[in-house]
Each structure stands twice: as C-alpha cells, then as structure tokens.
Picture 1 (cartoon, one colour):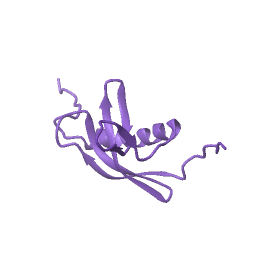
Picture 2 (cartoon, rainbow, N blue to C red; picture 1 turned 30 degrees about the vertical axis):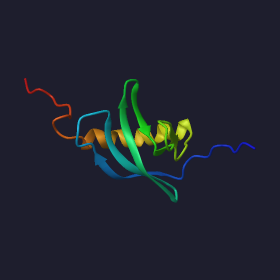
Picture 3 (cartoon, helix red, strand yellow; picture 1 turned 45 degrees about the horizontal axis):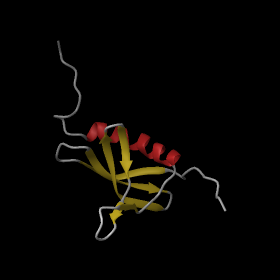
Length: 102
C-alpha cells in the first residue's frame, strides 16, 4: 500500500560544521524533521551541482554503500534549499566570493 507524501512539519538545520579541507564535501550538519533528527548529513558539491549526502553504511567486505535513511525527492530539495544558504555564509573566508573594489 502506498502512503501519500505529507509535507514535513518543519525543517531545522543544526550542528553545522563547514569542511576544514578543500574538496567536494562542503560540510556536515544535522536535520530535524518534526520529532526526528538525522545526524551525519553532508552538503556535497558534485559534478552536476550540489546535493545532500544522507547517512549511509558500507556493506561488510564490499564497496557497496546502503542508505541509512531514504527521503523523497521533494523533501530532499526542501532540505537542500534550507542548507545551501547556511554553507554559503559559513564557508571559510578564503573560499567565499567577494567584490573587487575597483
């Protein structure tokens, strides 16, 4: 039986940790959706744009990764819209865009 998707009660971003090294992972954070908190989320700057790296675990003795949490595409986009501006502000100053004064 398919359950219709309901909008999340609210999205709260917490425990924001910008990356300390250059790379595709811009940082980590936690997401609170109603009464559920998901730790270990990552904002990733991939080849086709930014996306949320949800927590996952590697299957023992393989290189296969399995998601710990699965979210709908619409919820994924809502979380991305909430977290992107936070990381644009909290990224190290050396990586932040700036205006040249001349």
